Image (cartoon, rainbow, N blue to C red; front, side, top):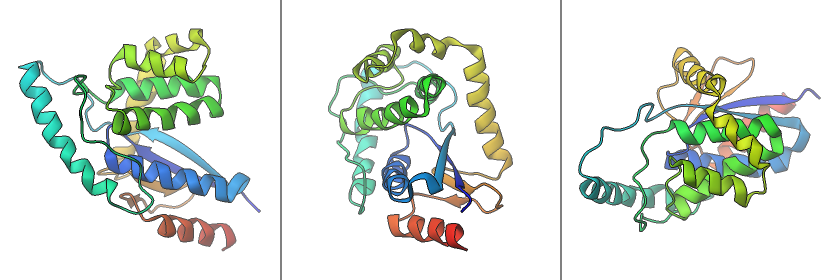
Length: 207
């Protein structure tokens, strides 16, 4: 049986991407070696926000995170907590993507661990994953080689990140999460229910 390859565009600051990540992690375990998932960058906030009144920005951000209660209420969802931290709000989407790509340079296992850890740190623990100090701390918590973290400063990783975002736009991706099976044209938008993802993958695996 030929291995099925699934490309998923995602942003670490997107709550619906967290739900999709949780569901697809279940299916990666379920389908095992029959399914390969490739996570690619999509940048909801490609540029750092303009600086303003930090206290007011944080208050607005806290109000925004009330909206996380919607994805939190879905079945097979990630765990969310309305923002209670003095950290943040996150400046933009790029730093977390760079950290994930630096981990991918080490191994697929390192990427998978940091990918999941970034989501939990942001949505469950209210940590600012656009801050370099936070990213370095998460890297260390996972026991990843300290020297590998420096790759986030490699211009090649930034070009790769921006290139993935640009390619997503060319594919017609208008929001995230978005998923596409390699060899097919259709792009599925949104955090689909677990069973919908399961049927879609199984149908394409078994014809």
